[in-house]
Length: 154
Image 1 (tube, rainbow, N blue to C red):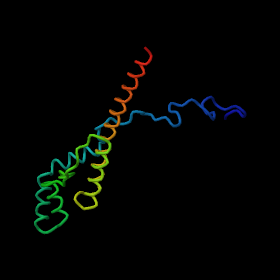
Image 2 (image 1 turned 30 degrees about the vertical axis):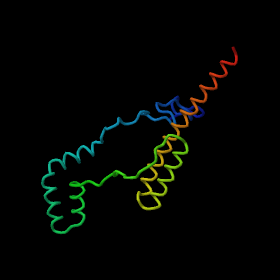
Image 3 (image 1 turned 180 degrees about the vertical axis):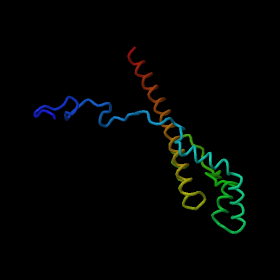
Image 4 (image 1 turned 45 degrees about the vertical axis):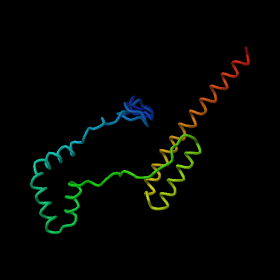
């Protein structure tokens, strides 16, 4: 029987434990590309049956099963992630040119020549180029100011 008034050494409210609250036991997490045992087992089971599964899927597709048809077609001709865009944009050398290019993209989106998502990608590219032009311009101006300020001190 335990004595009253005294707690055993390791049953106090705040004892030193191996893991601290809010701190992961593995801060780096699972290694990238590693797979669980269940995934590895499932892949091994499927790998041994690939030929039969594919043949059955093809039979189902030929019999009119639309889901099986989609699976077969997606494997034969995967959906396109993006496509080339034929849109003539003005040469961009100044900030004003970037504004004109953005206007061309907006007109192409509103006219249905490119999708809104494609327009967004083009706009981001133009904006990045505009930032480069602006940064180069600022660098040139700063260099000129430093040069003229250096000549005035002599």
